[in-house]
Image (cartoon, rainbow, N blue to C red; front, side):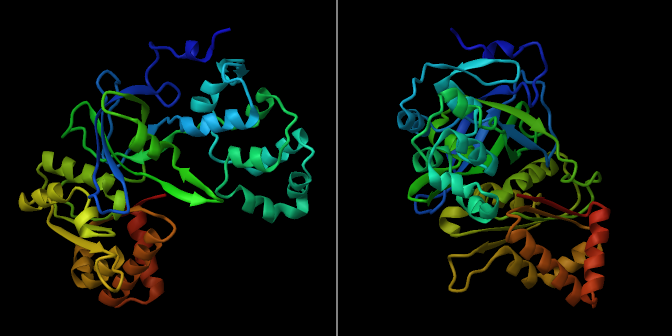
Length: 388
C-alpha cells in the first residue's frame, strides 16, 4: 500500500502555507567565528517560480522535518515497523510510519493533552498519578523540555499500536523567521538568519527542529518548503525621509538587514541608527563587513555595538542606548521610528525600560508621562516590536 499524502498537493494551486514552495538553497554558511559558542546560519533561498513577493518586516514560514536519529530512536524504542502504513490526515491520508514521524508529526514536544490521552495505553502508575487533576503543576513541569521519546521511555510498557500513538500527536507546525533581505536588492531570493538551538535537558541532548535541520542537514542545492507570512505590525515608514532606530541583538539583526538593504536601493534621505549586540566582537559580530560598508556609504548613519563577554561588566544594547540617551531622545523628538527585534522575555523588556528612562531623563517627564509617550508612539506606528 503506497502513501497517499503526497497525492493531495496540487502544483496548479498557488504556493501558500498549505501548499509551500520547495525553495532551493543557494547558500548556507555559518556567520560565527571558530571560537564562538554560537552557530548562526545565513541561508539564501531561491524564490524563482514561487510567485512570492515580500516587504521588509515580513517573515518566512519554513516547514521542517524531524531529526532522523530521533525518529529511529522512537521506532527502535517501540519495536515498530517503519514501513507500516498509518493514517495521518483528517481525510484519511496515509504515510509510512517513518515518513509520518519524520515530516508530518511534531515529536519534540509533549502536552498535557497527549499525556492524558496516553495514560489509557499503559498500566504505569506514575503516569496515571501525573495526569490527576491535583497534579496539574507537576504535569506542566514534566512537559517542559521533554519530548515523545521521553514519554515512551518513562511510562511503558505500552499496549498501544503505532497508529494509536501517532493519533495523539499534533501536526508539524511551520517555524517563522524574520526575513533578512530586501527583494528589491535580491530579486527572486529570500535570506534568513537562523541561530542553531542546542541544549541538554533531562539527561539528553536536545536540538531545535528547524534550526538544526538548517545547520546540520540542509546543504546547498537541497530544497526547503517555505511560504511568505506578512507582518502588519513591523514595517518601514512609507516616507524615506524618516529616521529609523533599530535595536537587534543576535539574530534580531535579521529584519534590519532587510530594512537597510531596502533603504540602500531606494536611496532614501532618512538617517538610520543600529544597536547590535552579542557575546564576542571577534566571533559574533554578524554581517560586520556588510554593515561597515553600509556605514561608509552613508546608508547606515550610526552603529553602536555591545559585546557582553568582552568586558568585565556585561554590556548590552540597552546600556548603549542609555549612554546615547541625549541623541536618541533628539532623534525620537524629530519623528524617528523605533524598532526592536529579538528576545521577548528579557531583551525587549530591558529595551522598553531603557526607553522609558531616556524619555524621563531627557524629556523631563515622570514615569507615567514617559509611558504615555511610548503608547502614543506605538499608536502612530513609530514604536514597533518583533519579539519572540
